[in-house]
Amino acid sequence: MAWEWRFEKADGATTEPAQAPGDFGTQGDAESWIGEVWQELLAEGVDQVTLLEDGAEVYGPMSLHAAAED
Image (spheres, one colour):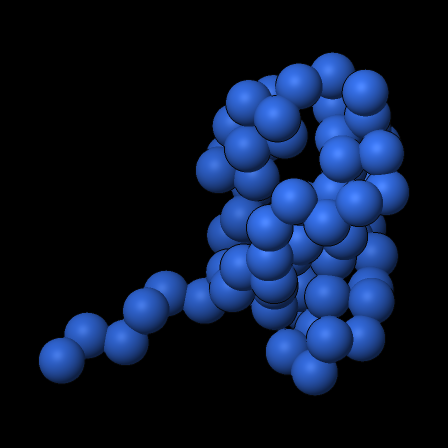
């Protein structure tokens, strides 16, 4: 199984980060990675990500922007 992230702009158009991470061996590895680098991706212009397993969407799009506080 290959786990990977699809990187997107706010309108759903795909984009690529400066350094693509490639595939991950497990869902946990993919999620740990995004947890470590999401701020860098946001600074590069990535607005949201979708997690894929062997090309099939698992979940997403998930915004990288912080939720607005009330």
